[in-house]
Length: 63
Image (cartoon, rainbow, N blue to C red; front, side, top):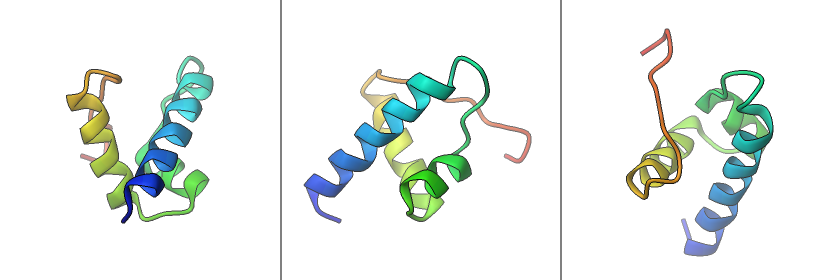
């Protein structure tokens, strides 16, 4: 995956989290459906955003 597509996906995710995160939990499956990619890519990007200190991540009931 190219850098530009990862940046676009991360930006989309951050916007969705900012909008929906206050009212409900935002899952990787929800983000994957919104972006149109595999949830594994979303989880990897979430990990990178967490490492950068931009978001906090908590495991849900499934994991």
